[in-house]
Picture (cartoon, rainbow, N blue to C red):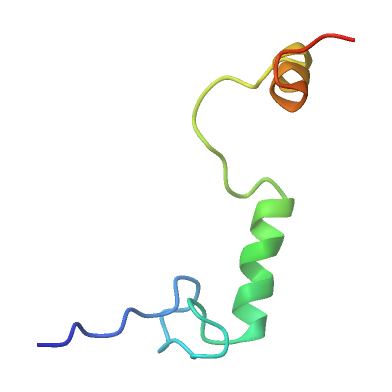
Length: 62
């Protein structure tokens, strides 16, 4: 038993093998634009710059 193919998350048309999980480069680019333009967000408080620096350096100080 095969599962039905999921549609494109942007326009709901059938997915393209070349652009999976999207149907076209246009929908892929629209999704990327949403990420760059803060259209998507992860819930929670914004990270403090010190917390980001600690993650990047692995907690080591110079």
